[in-house]
Amino acid sequence: MFLQKLTQPLKKATLLGVAFLLPLLAIAQNPNVGTDDGADDRLRVIAIFAHPDDADSKMGGTAALMAQMGHAVKFVSITSGDAGHQSQGGGALAKRRRAEAQEAGRRLGIDEYVVLDNHDGELLPELHIRQQVIREIRKWNADVVLGLRPNDYHPDHRYAGVLVQDAAYMVVVPNVTPDTPPLKKNPVFLYMSDRFQKPNPFSHDIVVGIDEVMETKVRGLDAHVSQMYEWLPWVNGTLEDVPETSEERIQWMMDRRTSWSNVSDEQRESLIKWYGEERGSQFQHAESFEICEYGYQPTEEDIRRIFPMFAQP
Ligand SMILES: [Zn+2]
Figure 1: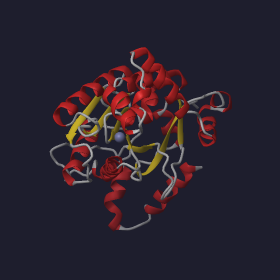
Figure 2 (figure 1 turned 60 degrees about the horizontal axis):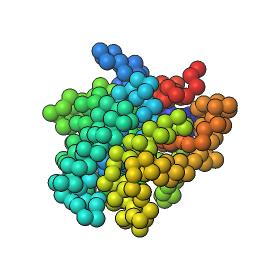
Figure 3 (figure 1 turned 90 degrees about the horizontal axis):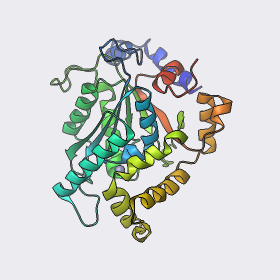
């Protein structure tokens, strides 16, 4: 249903005049998602977010599955994470968090995990950072871009969301950030999930069952030691609960993360849509994505190509 809703405004838009020519050119250049004619025909996915660990938490299972299924997957943290700690900070913390991110990416099996040099806790939707985001999407030759919704509690998350949205059309405009060649096609833009209700709740348009990679996801998160076992427990007042040994820590995180990712009723409905009744009814853990109204609007067939774990026609 949502696909019809999204494609209709585009058809109407084609009737409008010259004032809309530029956006329409971008739409006209839309891809056959996943059928790039380049040497590497893997579908190219990039997730862009605020802090090292954001995408790991929200879509680590999906990223691991996509990588296993042959997609080229890259994570980009816009800030260095150099503020989120109770006793460390600055360059030393940024260095530590960059190394943790590299290890997390290795454990998830993705191609790259890049941490940019912007300060944690100070992110704003500034032009030079928008240009960084545009360059990342272009250099990756992305078919699919995943970002955060701009109504999160954390200002860095909010502005990371705005920055990705602000790039959602500019990536195809040659005179914008001309040091990096524009994309020939506008990617599909998707949001990672959140729990915020205002001004509008998250829509579980696409839901991926992650039972088989739950442990991979947790082991990826386990690489973010400074965050998972130091900063977050400290700020949440649960530092004394953190176990000592590495295997106990993984079990501790497994227990918490599996309960956080339990399938909701809304997710179940979407799982059944994408996997069919039998498989969709069985998943216990899932990750959700919402289709952004900017960028290329995917057909149902496109979505099944982007998410090859779904039932295929
Ligand atoms: Zn974050």
